[in-house]
Length: 119
Image (cartoon, rainbow, N blue to C red; front, side, top):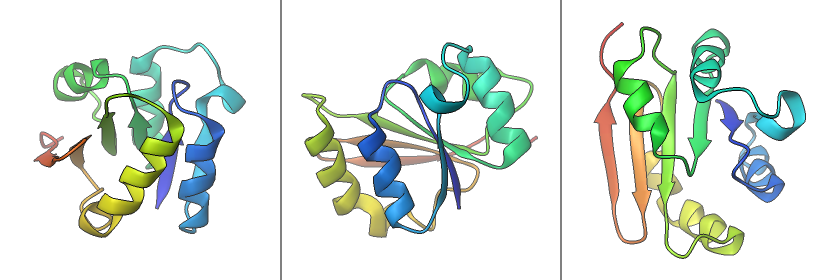
């Protein structure tokens, strides 16, 4: 699977996905500062799942002309890298097969999976 890690996440999150054998790019490394809608276009073009803390991706993903390949929105409180990595370890068995064309919200105690609208 291919992932795009948003600028608001640390490189440790990129490393976590790489440890799963994934092809991963980090926004900070390739094009810092580009808009969320540009990331959605890149996600679709490169078949990458977006991993983010930014809830704006929800609105964009369901209203944009071009849908992202998928989104993992991390809604954790407090937000710190160690909590994010622990939670990813916990939910990975549940979400690993659900990534493609889904919008996944990972909370402190819940996971919601919603299909992306058809193209």
